[in-house]
Length: 359
Image (tube, rainbow, N blue to C red; front, side):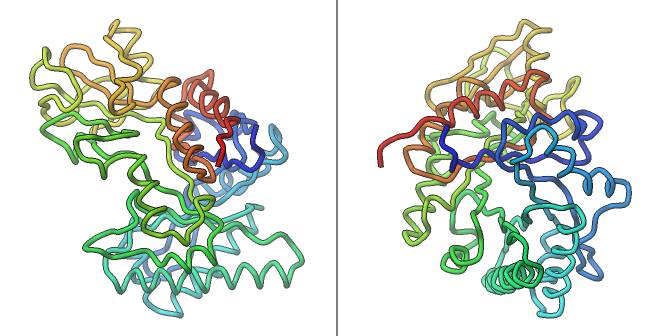
């Protein structure tokens, strides 16, 4: 197993009833993201909801019982407009930064993760850059003043390196301030974004629309920003699938005509369904199941008018093979509560992390 390869995953306190943090087998991972801390829309302080504070603050201690070497990061999210306002003023950025470090200390986290999805103007991107510079400076100073390990800093970025009308990420600053970026390389198609047809929600390749694929995302970042080491790129693997309602039950290929999200047991109102529940769907309905379509490198299953795209133990190794060939730093899974009770997807990812390809 390549010891430098990042095997990360997200876990959310909101899923504690489905997967208690005490039941996480942290041996599958090198890093675990715990969510979420939130940004107060009035004060711009990073806070944790009181109903989740105990769970989140004891997360590191809990998961380290199964893997003492696992690194934990507190994941911070906020509405895009709130994050934009926070980043627009030096005083607000200072409040955010100080409070984020404080929350990381209280939960004995090894790092912090920011999910700003995504800066939507040139001004916002410039403010994002200022935030990264000041955040990094603060964690360096904190480590020096208190003689402890410097906090890991990670930020979520879009699958493609250019967002909203040719707005580019501040790549030189990212290289200097962040340990890595998490590419959100999934949910390319959902029943909300693709109402009228099914889609390869986490396509590895996409001959129909190349930009909507894992391969195109990673390659675009490397090509657009040659200064960015591929070893600072971590790509995403979803442990959830998406369920569409077929317009015609006899037409059930990728991009078949659809009518929005399917309705069914364990399917959310927007069509999202956990991998564990996809297995139940297949078993209970004796549904047709193609584990790898071969073209988009996704699995899909269907029964009656319900059609589901998803990742599985066949498609995940293919994604890891590509990632290794492009020499990226690793992967993150989201979210681990969606896996089944024998950790099929986590096993598939870890088992194929050993692969080393020549540079």
